[in-house]
Length: 418
Picture 1 (tube, rainbow, N blue to C red):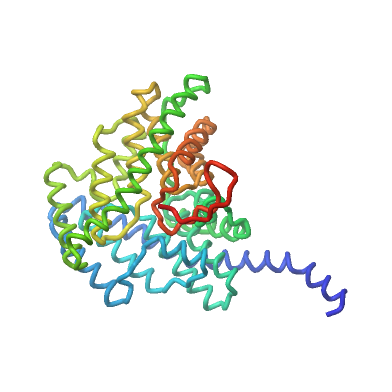
Picture 2 (picture 1 turned 90 degrees about the vertical axis):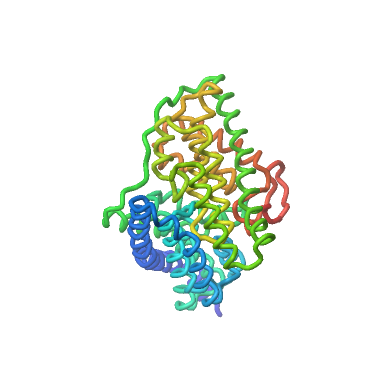
């Protein structure tokens, strides 16, 4: 190749790559966005049905058996959940397309019958598996395959929650702590915008909350926010530890996966009857909204953790992020007045700070605060998230998350999260 041809190729590389990702991001945004919109409405139907018909709760063990069965006959009985998405991006391990319908159906079954879980874990897997499949059909190389998988994650998260900035950065930040995949910024941002645009066309409103009692920045307020950030870091460690211990506990006493799912469903039914409330079944969106208005029961955050670990540990599907929102918001609402902060503002701080602690994603958490709560006094949210990030150690909801750089020193450690 002559020098002139080489220079021409290098000159054309940037605009061609840009145009390529503009096209691919739109394709992923439309396809994954459409699937996510359908999932949203199915999820809403399942939630309303569960709330309307109390007897559906008693079918939870049968739902667990069904989930184990469909995963087994599909060859995905060793399912790793959202960890599969992290492996797909970091190691370019292709995700099977059948992951999408499996997690789609099993999450709806979990919520229809009253299991306690979220929806984002399912939607990240759905977005990742569909985009990974599209990438293979396009014959993308190893590097581009990783980026297109992140596009699918961004689209799905954005369309479901209406938070495009959070969605785009989350997919780039969550894979390897300490490294941001900036090469994916254009396709992730564009696909997230396409996803949320389609969602709004279909009547899905963005998730936002009005919070009260936002204080001026003073020395006492800074100390109070730091204190709440420390407590949120401790809570996030407890949340992660219990989520990881729960499946081990089930496997120890119920080695058979069918027996494990049935037993888990029965335990959740018994606990629901013991508590005397359905507040901790399902995702708990109403409880989160109530906490952000300044009202939460003191035991709510603990009960949600217990319900979620018993549900997901038994093999039911969904996700942990919405339960994390529930836990952080109710905890912050209860604790904030004890340290001098408004309950509503404390709930908002708790929500984003516990999320930061369990995902190790401070920039995502800051953008989450901006998109959910409007960004007033954003430095206070940043301070609490920073404290929670630093003090939550190397724990994570996702055991396949890589901690590339130390949280305490500018040191390369390259280890998996606990």
